[in-house]
Length: 264
Image 1 (cartoon, helix red, strand yellow):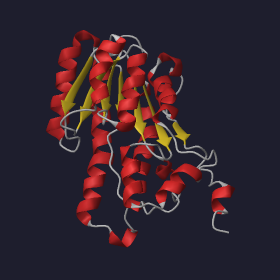
Image 2: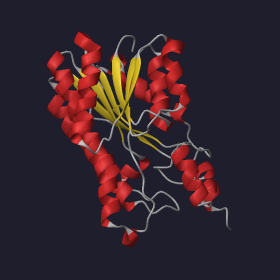
Image 3: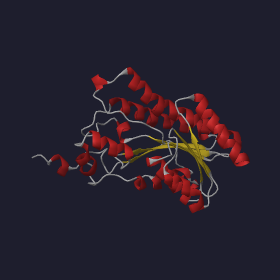
Image 4: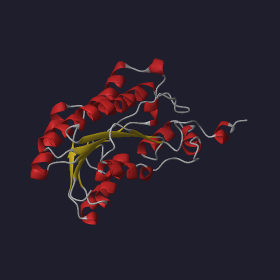
């Protein structure tokens, strides 16, 4: 990753920030686009700690002009070297029974998770094609993209949005392959983050599920995801495109038998 510049949407905290750390540790430069007014404090030390360049822009991924201006700024700063990678980690969730969804909630979720991902990938691909040196796009899908029910959760619209992200991988891999641009996704299971901790506060019953339902009997950590993302961004994955990497502790295959027996 040394010397490469990677754009990370949603990189201000959580999984996105963990991905930024992994890129920086491998010598990559990071350009973060996030809705937060300020990123987590850890972000500010990445440059000095690892001798890389880092930048942060507050961006609304649901607004075309906001995203396009941000990419223009990144490319202007990068100069002739351009960008070599993009990770679309910006996303929101919605816990709601199917019948209780509102139009506004659904539209907001689709705008972030689907349109925000699609347009960021488009802008990244346009920038990579202009340099004619290829690149890598990694999109964050979900265990919920696999068409399964996550135990104890009602996530129908979220499932639909993440299935859309996963569904974008194959078509883009084919369309962009001749330009040397690889497109893949990862599908995380339950990962320890502010989002999952907030959910556990709102729905206390989820705590036990998060930690014990996966067959490996633990909640995932951001560090469980970053090696795969780093691989996909690097030249080591030069023959890998059109793939979704499911990293769930086995939850996509089924739940732990011990967890199922908990109430017997």
